[in-house]
Amino acid sequence: AQSVTQLGSHVSVSEGALVLLRCNYSSSVPPYLFWYVQYPNQGLQLLLKYTSAATLVKGINGFEAEFKKSETSFHLTKPSAHMSDAAEYFCAVSDDGTSYGKLTFGQGTILTVHP
Amino acid sequence: SQTIHQWPATLVQPVGSPLSLECTVEGTSNPNLYWYRQAAGRGLQLLFYSVGIGQISSEVPQNLSASRPQDRQFILSSKKLLLSDSGFYLCAWSTRTGANQPQHFGDGTRLSIL
Image (cartoon, rainbow over all chains, first blue to last red):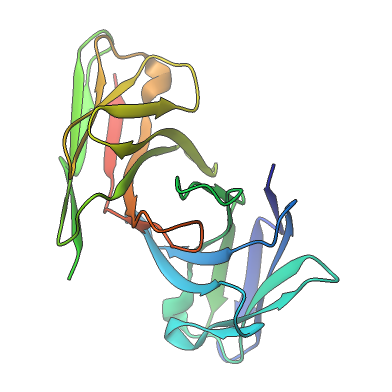
């Protein structure tokens, strides 16, 4: 069974600073990994996905994530935080390769950006 | 392009009343469909998923049920709501082409039980 651990339920950065949100996964098969962002009272929006092509994945809004198999990690980064990045971020891993497409989500990390 | 609609956006219901939340997807056929609940300060809990009309799988035993009467319609129901049913309910869809496909979410329904 897959699992996802997001280290740090809250991360606070200054505007213009580096954003680093941590995600570690556990999977018995080569994983597919996703990062989502959720703004208050909205659904989840896909930021980026890793599907075994390039290990460095670029997403929307200047975010990127690097898949590191040896560390079982898929950390999300952005070089320079913007006030509009304040939101909750979820890391997710796919299921065991059935056609059901189920995802296992981490508990989420709330990103606060200070001016 | 594909879109997903959920309604209502907010709902306030008394304990013991029935519930019906609807979700429809446009622009795609034969999607996988999902219902999640997000309680305050917690992650996403998968409640139900469906891979076809009339095919419903329940992830967590509870006071809720789901139905898929049409290919792109997914309904979440309850006969008698409990206080613990409060939360943010999200519907999502994915293409039925394997585990490398992301899920796409609706805007959610905020359910408050009084």
